[in-house]
Amino acid sequence: MAAGREGWERASVRPTAGRADARGRRAVGAGGPAVCLTHGVRESEFWMLMDDEFGEAYAAVVARSQHMGALDGRTAQEAVDAGVPPRRVWEALCDHMGIPPVRRLGKDRPLRRGPVDE
Image 1 (cartoon, helix red, strand yellow):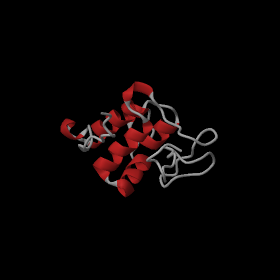
Image 2: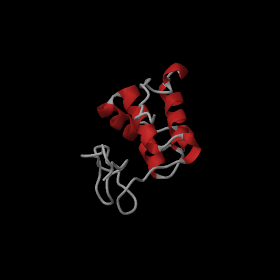
Image 3: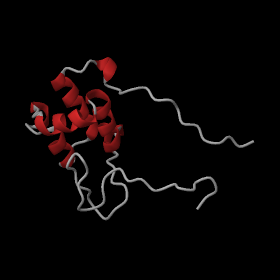
Image 4: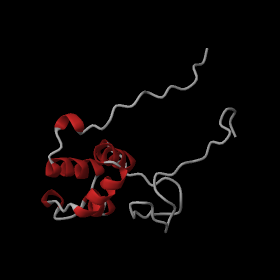
């Protein structure tokens, strides 16, 4: 293990295969991160945007309950699970819920800076 990384654990974006997380999502494949990288928004970023806008508990409800015509009548959860690019799902949900453009990028977070080599 690298110096300064004691207690560092590999975090997966989705649960291990066969196990469901709090939103009822199941991982595909055998462990490790399962991240969708299409169209510039990862699935993990999609869920962060959902949590920022609706709060963690309500985001899960919105994702499972709002059927959208722009997603062929699917919910956000169904669309993401079907492989629809997370960016498209997020934009459809924002339009459907009337989220103003100023809030569609999520909360500002400070930059994480690593050690500086001298």
